[in-house]
Image 1: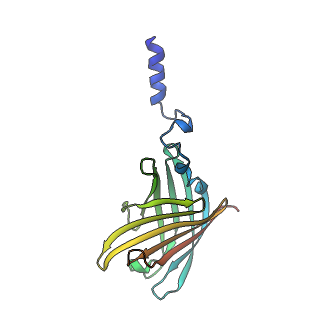
Image 2: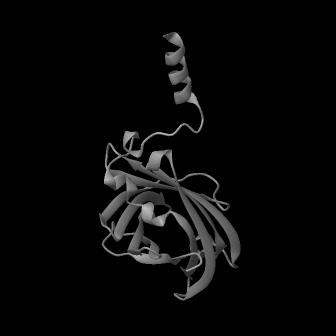
Image 3: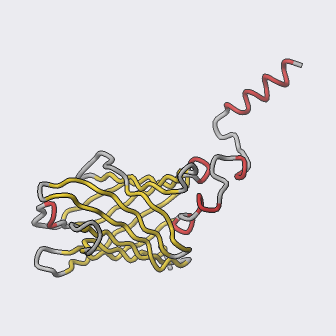
Length: 188
C-alpha cells in the first residue's frame, strides 16, 4: 500500500511530468490571449529619432510558453538607436521578456530587460480589449516629471501583429510613439 503512494508522489516530483492543461493554474481563456504570438517572428522596426524621422531596422524574436501557459518567454535580437537614451549610432541589442498572466487580477504583466539595461524594470500591465488589441501601461518618475509608457499590440492576425511603444508626459492625454514593430511570422 505504501509503495504505490510513494511512486505516485515521486511521479509528481519528476521533472517533465505532464499534467492536463485544465489542471494548471491558468485554465481561463484570458490566460491564453498571447498564444497567437508563440513562434518565431521577423520584425521591421521603426525607431523615432530626435529630428522626427524614423529609422528602419530589422530584428527577430522567438516566443515560447512556460508554466502551463501562464507565461511566455521572448528572446529578441536586433539593432536599435534610441535618441531618448543618448544613442548617437545604431547598436546591436538582445532582449528578454517574460509576459505573465495573473489569474487573481485578470491582467498581464510584461517584464523586459536587455543588454543595454540587464535588469527587469517595473512591468507594463494591462490586457486585451478584444482579440486583436492589447494595451499595457507603466508609470515612472523622470527628471522632467511623471511619465506614462504604453505598449500596444494591434492588428493581431495568424501570421502578423503590430507592436508600438509610446509615452505620455500629460497622464495619457497625448501620446508620442517612439518605437514600432511590424512582426511577420518567420518563413511566411
